[in-house]
Image (cartoon, rainbow, N blue to C red):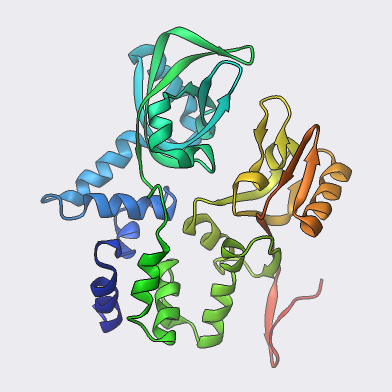
Length: 329
């Protein structure tokens, strides 16, 4: 282990995680911050903790295409535990908290005490181990019966951020060392990059820490553009091609649930040339207005947000005397 890694362990203590383990333990299917949290929970707990962690993920993580299998287990067994993101919204008319597991297309009632302990589920959603139980009496919300309840939730994210931890640890490092630590913290090897490239990589973090900063980045494939945003934070929504509706991005008039621009720090349009809008005039007009003012309206809802937007695309490049330049068609 290098001297810098030793210093990280010394200054951050239990907050330091060996990111190589996320590859060695085959946890790539989970967001990086979730995988790192699980490693920190399991590491050193017993002999063979690595296999126990693998088994835990195999037993409880379901791919989106397995959503009917999840529903089947709810119907036949009455209960299921799954690793996923839980997002909660409040129905004032019925005094209910309704949890949404979007990847499984599931809605479930959430007890108030679980919401109180995990208030980030009301804001951006939280990843964790969700215990779902089929109930005998269905809850009716907005004309829809919900026969499922969340009976337990174990979060895999820290519920609160404490900047003082970073502020205190920063004093241990020189500026160059701190840049290396930041590059390392997003899962990249700083030794592969020169000083200018390191700063360019860190510039991708600006939309996450500064409100209403909009970036466009175009470059060749496999340069880590999407990788960083997908793995560094739960407060990012990535739109990878396909169609995105005004309900998803701005505000859902039927469910009255705020869209991604209202709840995320950054919305990333990956492969922007392949993103389609069902109503281009409405969407583009609202996006232009939002980027200029930080506000948008839909229906009777007016929203002010500091979410940033990132537009990314892949282009072919070639090496010339001036460096890498786009290839002309």
